[in-house]
Figure: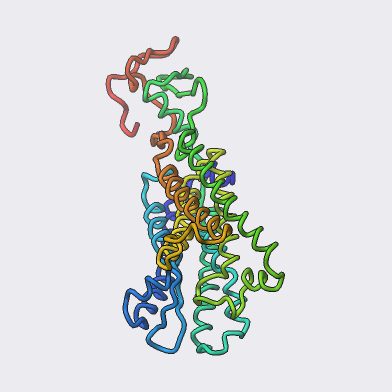
Length: 374
């Protein structure tokens, strides 16, 4: 990720990245609107997202799941972050890459699922449009990676050093003919956007623990279930189909565990791009676990938790832990990171531009006024 760390996204790259994010949001929002139009009641879509079996008004299938409105909201937030100049380039690049990774992992299985031909009862045109949407979003995810990789220029280290001198931080000066070049002295300042240590440790530990909990259950189910049954839940089959744009249950859990563990490693290293990655993983984990909890409450399992088998109790407790950990990690990762201290300057100062600055020896006195065009 050195390209994210050392490069500065150009204004054109930020704008194009924001446009790609808007396209991602519109593609998913169109399917959410489609579900609302075929629902007998608007609330049926909400309860379907929470795991209940609700029938649409027409003989068709639901298209979206609980993660789809989160992807729409995330794409809109990333689009705003990309065009805001106050957001450091490392944070904007991390947000674009995090959205690309989440989109790619959650949409990839739909390419072969919707093209397998085992959804015999559905309109072939509907499944073809859903598959085309998944392919288009995968292409847009690749476009975001290309934007971050190609739309950057080298960082302005001189400007960063000048900013330190202009704020009176320790510096020495090399000078000639009335011009001072600010040179840094002491430790180099932290990169803008980097999370502070306390927030980084909190978010990293919580994400790592939640990711391990989800991954642990996937290992458990892989060992407990028949190999063919688990493969269907991982790669897709008519027996596990729930919505057109929803990945198989085991694929979704494995993808979220991978995102959480990757974000935990990045935020513990305090990478400048780690905060948006941690927020993305935490939000997805929160929604994933909250859906399981709401469904358990709705079906009355939580009211009779003590009477349930031990495995069911452990599943409910794990879901509660993942939801709380995701919420807490989201709050920790959302805290502001190291501010951008870069000052727009070319590293050259005239005498007297900084308070208390002394004239270097063997140099002419500064002019009372700067020459034209200085």
